[in-house]
Image 1 (cartoon, rainbow, N blue to C red):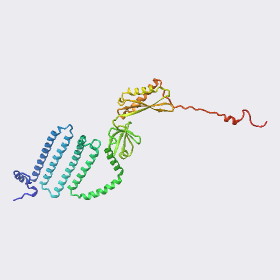
Image 2: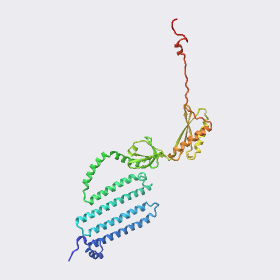
Image 3: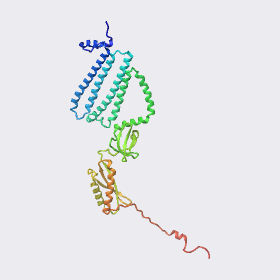
Length: 381
């Protein structure tokens, strides 16, 4: 009488009515393995469909589809875990040699861990986007801080995944951690500039002195629109359509003027105008305010205004102050206002003076007295 090997014995969770079928199939291990695999895959499909069914019902009550994406990842993970368990069970009932079976199971578990790492990173990113939209409860998680939290969660997930892989292959993690500490110190000294940029990127993302779309002016004079705030560098697009990449360590240690910051994104333009002494200053103020008010791009609120700034060497100095809706409009609006002001001043007979200097020559007569009487040679006859 033949006995069933231990690895082909009916599992304890199997119903009593199916133990006879299991014992019959156990005489043909490949058939039993195929049955276990097929049943496991069918169960994975059923579980995944069940989770998606309820996910669609729940997400139908929410305004966005982010929760549905998250539920899909959860459903895929549930089905994937069941499918890999079926694969491992199918390998175990095949009756492979011990070494081959152990390594095959380790490979399957390694693939499962890698798939779980990938799914966990996608789920964490979607979860952060969901938290970022709940402004009243999670104010720290928003669009500008999502890359920072995303990076932190990614590092944690990869660390746990690496530890799980070491355990699957029975590798002592203590020695690896000690080696990683030594390597980390060496890398820290060798890549201190890169690490400085990374830490500066964390602080910039958390502190948010500027954000995407802002117009900034650096202490070195560069001016442009912020097109990307990364972990290592910040990118500016100048008005010449030239992209400038600045390391975050430099951005953190330089003066940054955010023209889009403050209570609104509007930008104030200052137009300096000098008129000749003797001009009608009330007429000049009224003319400059009218030119700005009639311009299509100049904001009505705040209204344009003119200030007299002082008495210059050759002119009375005025300044026209007006606002535009965006810092990018500064150049073209300034050009149009200067052109219009020059034409209107000429049309109204108001002179724009240029610097003048009067030179006075003094003749005190000392030179003529030193030369003596005219025509005399000073000698004896």
